[in-house]
Amino acid sequence: MRRPILFTALAAMVLTSVWAKKADDPVMMTVNGKDVKLSEFQYLYNKNNDQQSQQQPLDEYVDMFVNYKLKVADAEAARIDTTEAFIKELNSYRRQLSAPYLYDSVVFNNLLQEAYARMGYDIDVMHLMLPRGHNHEETKVMHHKLDSLRTLLVNGADWAEIAMANSVDPGVKHNKGHMGWMTANQYPYAFEVAAYNTPVGEVSQIIDTEFGHHIVKVIDRRPSRGEVSVQHILKLFPRGNNVDNSPEQKVAIDSIYNLLLNGADFDELAKAESEDPGSARNGGRLPSFGAGRMVPEFEEVSFALADGEMSKPFATSYGWHIVKRLEGKGIASLDDCKADLTRAINGDERGAMPVKSCLERLKKQYKSSVNKKGIDKVMSMVAANGGQLDSTLVDRLRTDNTVVFSVNKRNHTIAECIDLVKVTVPVKTESAHMYIVDAVNRTMDEATLMRSARISHLNILNMASSSTSIATVCSFLR
Image (cartoon, rainbow, N blue to C red; front, side, top):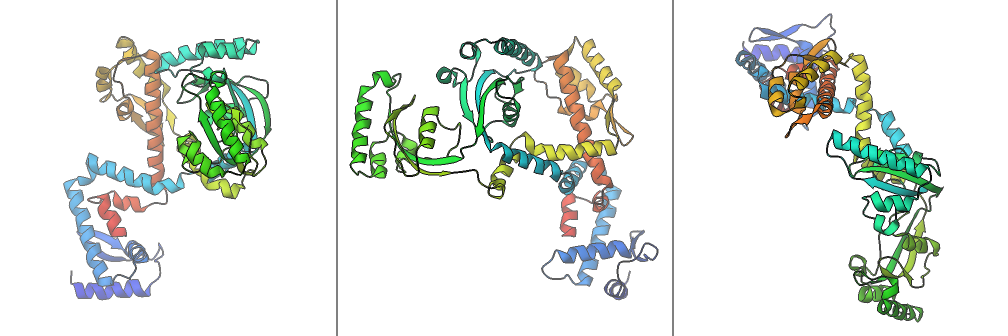
């Protein structure tokens, strides 16, 4: 093709026309035997220049566009677009582009409102925890034991006695199962939900977290007292000692208290005398705290003081303290809390909920469904393998064509899912079923998202699917 004549024609078409209507979309060039319509060229030319600090000359853009189309033709001829590496790169690009459209803002706002509402109340709880099961069978055993203990407690058994004998909560030695007052956004979300939703006087159902299996009993509920900032001076009990066998610490704290009463500077005495290394260098100042973040005695004294008031010496399980309250403040506004609450929500299982909500809608839209007969067939292979799933069977399933789910009427096989099943040692039937179903569901979710990305308004992906690399396409579009 003759470049000067081509450029003149392009300039006339691109610079003087508006977006071509579908009924009037002329072919403006042919590259390697394929027609390029005006609408495609205009869209990409405008998109490219919108993202540049200086507009790119049309003749330079034509050269880049033709070279790009020739690279696409070379890639198609070499079948590069069918390689595993390319397909993975393309899928990654699709996920990045579709992510902003796969987020349910209504669900997120509900979580934000829920988190803020819980900040308005503190709850006083008893707690019992058993260790986390390492597999499905161990989890069942722990649940059975905890359910039996719950029945005893509901029927009036002494919580402290049961907790001391069974709970693996490290604090049980000191609190005998009484956690005390807790406030929102301190504990795992599942734990918080159960604690805040359990009525006063009742025992929760079993709660599973990454730390273990729990039950709680709600003793009381009160409006939140907000947060308080204090500075303190601490004289530690010697290891293994307590208030009854540490007279030297009592003499020392009383001496410091008398100096303070006679006008000594709290900051200076804290730096010189406090045995809390974390706060002493800052004049005894601690970060602001609310309910449940300090031992109960320390918390109660701190909140009972007026701003600027100093306590008398008092003991906790750590030693003797003197506290000076600096400032108390109520619950901040939602606007002031929003950034912290957003970080908290995105940092635990709530962060996935807006995406899951959108995903559930997409699964209904594209009729994504698990094929139970296919799962049963896979489980029959587990049964025939001595009732266990092991690495040998996993290898066999990598080439198995049993259909286990479908998306938009397209069937998908166990071979597409099995790489998500990680078994280092053989697992029994129940655990095997859990692993298989989890892998199938995760793969079905991914396939649904990819289907959504393919047919969404992100049509530029169709162009990307035939390029030599996604990076080249991204560079071209920028």
